Image (cartoon, rainbow, N blue to C red; front, top):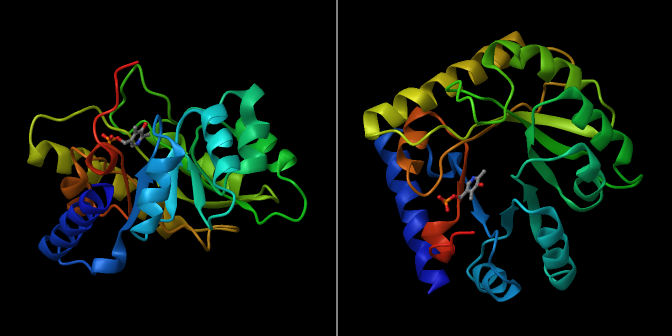
Length: 231
Ligand SMILES: *Cc1c(COP(=O)(O)O)cnc(C)c1O
């Protein structure tokens, strides 16, 4: 069933790329496996999915330990408190939710020697939502430049979680703001920004709009694994 769901999500991504005049390979699928067990991840892996996103750090680390036999890539997409940076630095390949220099500095310091640089995106509060984390859009470039100086991080792009929008056009409009900011940062450039190529936006409900606006990575949970029990 997870395999069928993955095929449907891949078809949605391919159709959205076609509709936007983009290459089918322009968008990466991150399977968001939070709250789901190791069997679900194994099933997805059997259908050629190898990148997984997790929000809850201890749950994620336990899952990684049980799945060590598989060549998986793990992305932290949940909030990172400063007392939890070590779990992220030691276990994840990517972190999408950097919104303060202090967190980035701790991640860089705590990245184990010999591991590849942690790949990071800055979370941007693109719609100015008062409840959301994320750096303000006008402060993003300065933070990107500071994070780019850290030796054990590789800054890869931006990530957003906009408030649900009422229709497709409204979804595209907010995602387009993120794309414009991303393009501005790429154009500004600077040291350490040569791998700035990732715009992490779009989930089950709005992945078509995100791809229309220029997302390069969609984070999809429900459409792959099913509905999560409410906490
Ligand atoms: C849970 C979550 C997702 C996946 O959401 P779905 O609606 O289940 O696709 C994506 N991104 C983040 C940051 C999440 O917390």
